[in-house]
Image 1 (cartoon, helix red, strand yellow):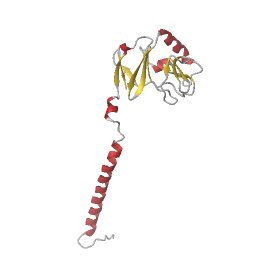
Image 2 (cartoon, one colour):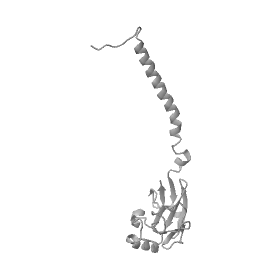
Image 3 (tube, one colour):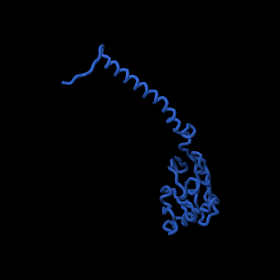
Image 4 (tube, one colour):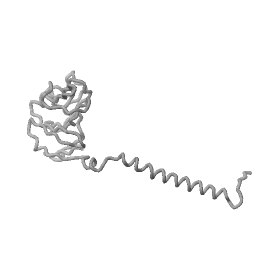
Amino acid sequence: MTESVVTEGGDATRRDFIHIAAGAAAVGAGAMVVWPLINQMNPAADTLALASIEFDMTKVQEGQQVVIKWQGKPVFVRYRTPAELQRVIADDHAHDLKEPQSDADRTKPGHQQFLVVLGNCTHLGCIPTFGSGDFGGWFCPCHGSHYDASGRIRKGPAPLNLVVPTYDFVSDTRIKIG
């Protein structure tokens, strides 16, 4: 037979209740302390407001680039000329691509003339300038990275192509980034 130790007046049951109540209070107090620490890691309201933006593509003329700000980062929106398109499509299988990617993978079907990329060099985050590179695209003057007109790294220390953000055409003239 099993014997249980019970003192006078049922002290074991009262003691168990006190332990459970104290444990629950400690868990509640711990949650109240930890919640603000976790909550402060959530994005700020102004960041959430910029989670996605829309842009009117009619503001960009052929051969021109517009820089817009999205989530605190520059975004290059380029309306490429037919000559630029021919050049980047011809270079789709070039042997000197550090990160091989076709131009069709970097643009939306039916809108290949528009290129949308984040305007930060993938080496150290500098802002490349357009038109001064060796491949008809961007050049990062900080460390000498050269990108073509599709934003693909062709020469220099940058390890990756310019990043293509998530975007969609909401109409023929408007894009939504983010």
